[in-house]
Image 1: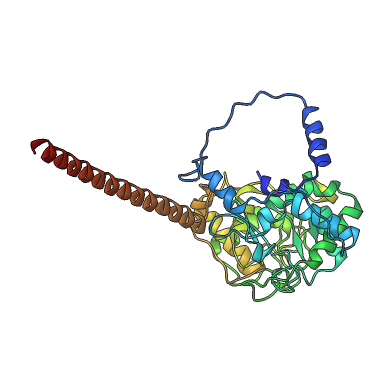
Image 2: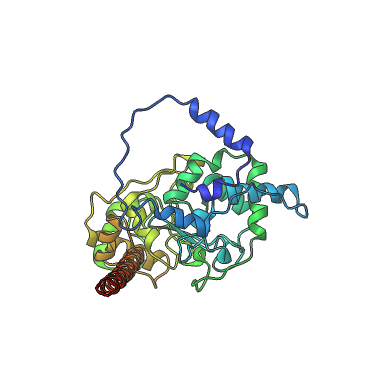
Length: 365
């Protein structure tokens, strides 16, 4: 719940959302069990998080900027809460404002850098391409939205007015560029694929992946994406080359796409993709993901069956390390606090004993 972003909403917008929610039919739904790991399942710690990261106050327009820029800033920073996913987190798990929109995570999915950097971000995109992506989730030769971003396009962004979309673009263009680990733009990996909608094997690249990955791709993927990864001629099924997902510097989004599929909602004719997580084992998902990134995208990234097993459990190696570090930190703090309390109690006992001895000595006199 990104209330740290919503805190800057105007009163009118808050009341408008409240009116809409109250107009929806009631649904009886049991409260879900808290499944967060310790210490994140301790609600009292939220008070400490707020002290470090919650900044209250309404959005204040910049008088030195245009109306479109200010509207875009309000949509990106407040209503759209884009930074909740696209901004990395600091040591206190708040948004790192020094690296605004430089890329973050949405669960396991990677939310890419959307600053104006020409390699790591969207600086090499045209305004029309950015607008098209926000409205449809698809820009051939650049990117196709997946995971939470595809759902954001389906449920939210496609319904915005053209003026609001252009306002978002105007604001993003002005966000300071942030570099990343990418060697080249995510969409630049892979040769331009031949559009081929059938599952034939013509043009298959030898040595482009493991035999298991090759077999899985032919049987599960080539019918829609084509034997050469070119997608369908009408664009309803995306090309896998010149695509930001296989070309990313991390493999999570490719693996998660295989596991969970893509909910595209037929926005602008784009078709959804089935989830294969229930059909394939961890080794098969890893083999297929590595085949896709090696043949069509960034060949420097890969996943293992152990990585996939962890993703199914709801985390990545980095996130698990973060949770373990937080648990260790809390445990150390608890031990330190207990030690200080024991030391204090010991000193109080000594002081009490000393007072009693002095009192007894006075009584004898």
